[in-house]
Amino acid sequence: MARKTKKPPTTPIIIGPLKKHFGRVSLQDLVAAGRTFPVTSRVDLQSAIDSLFEKHFSAKLIGVHPQYNHEALSTAALVTAGHYPVYIGPLQHEEIDIGEQLPRRCLRHGLWLGTEKKTPYLVLLTPSHRFGQENGVRIEIAVPPGAEGAAFSRRFFAELEALVNQAGSYRGKVISLEQMDHYGGEAGVVKVHKLNPVGRDEVILPQKTVDLLDRNVTGFVRMRKKLGEFGLPAKKGLLFYGPPGTGKTHTIHYLSGKLPDHTTLLITAEQVGLLSFYMQLARFLQPAMVVIEDVDLIARSREQMRGGCEESLLNKLLNEMDGLREDASILFVLTTNRPDQLEAALASRPGRIDQAIEFPLPDEEGRKKLVRLYSRQLPISDPLVNSVASRTKSVSAAFIKELMRRSAQYYVDDGGKGALLLKHIDQALQEMIITGGSLNLKLLGADAGAGFLAQEATVKFSN
Image 1 (tube, rainbow, N blue to C red):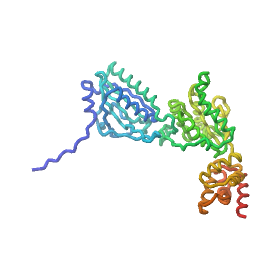
Image 2 (cartoon, rainbow, N blue to C red):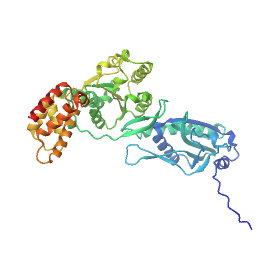
Image 3 (cartoon, helix red, strand yellow):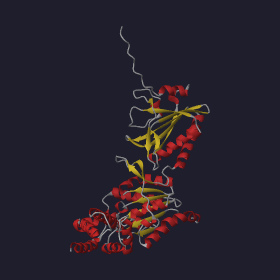
Image 4 (cartoon, helix red, strand yellow):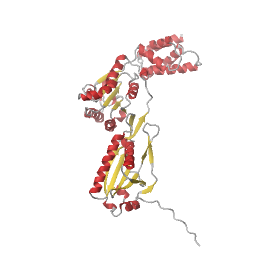
């Protein structure tokens, strides 16, 4: 007698439970409405929809899986049992970093089946696709035809969007957007930056620079509400300029810590194509500080531009700065090493840049403070601090930071006992400036005068 073999179990498809859920209503008669949320709101959307079904609506959550992932799942795909049915399976989540101890879990695909006042409905969450690339999250609601279903659909979307706007998972954090790996000019994921805290004693700048920062950033933010009562603008544009390595980015890190209620959005020149996404986030998460580093790369003088694409990016920046409402609590901070190359429409027009703040090379007193700061736990005497400061005229803070690190290497090579000696400083200077040549001099943030002084120091050391 032939032995019977068991047929492998078939994977259930969603159309059966849908027919049972909607009963006498034909699936082909369902009325669907959908909204697409940007990828930057994915975490807040997940929090909002979880809250809705926990506190306001009762529904059963089902995991659904399309056979192919190159286009968005839709109600039409759910109710069609053709060649490409949608299967029931485990719920799948993706973990999204929001800068906290644990990442936030977000559903990949989810289907809720519920009934509101005898009106059956479905809610579908799925990635949104454009040209085969994910560009956001889509929520679709399907209900029976009629006024009751339409009213529920509108109410659900209204409550969902209100909760999304209240969430703000990225509010008060330092973030940037990752561009998709194609040329659509769209944002991919939100990256949360965990910056090292920078204390006030680590911001070593001339007093006039510190005073301008205090008045135009922290002081302005502190008085913003009162200024608004007088009908004065809440937005402000600042330009940080000076040679490389003088502390512009370092100061932005300090300001991010001083403005904990502000969301800081970091934009590099290559991400300026995502400016509209950044501004959408800034308006949503305000108060916000929008930082565009090396702005001269996109806002150079029009006479120096190489084509229409560069001018288009510049116009986008100008339009976004002009388009903000006066009561928008947004700080623009632009940085540049070459202020002379900036387009006059940006640098010279009132209302875009309200204050330029210079970050000069440190003076002798500043260099002494930098040597003490960057020597960390190295045993260094006051006379040696004074000597290093006198030997490093015309260098940047970044140069002194690297000088002390290399001096520490020579100190360790020499046994690492006792105090740091002048010979360790001279060995580091020789390697950084004389051996490395003029290019290394520029890379480290120093000019030709520093090379002359270092050469003097090296001659003394070799003698």
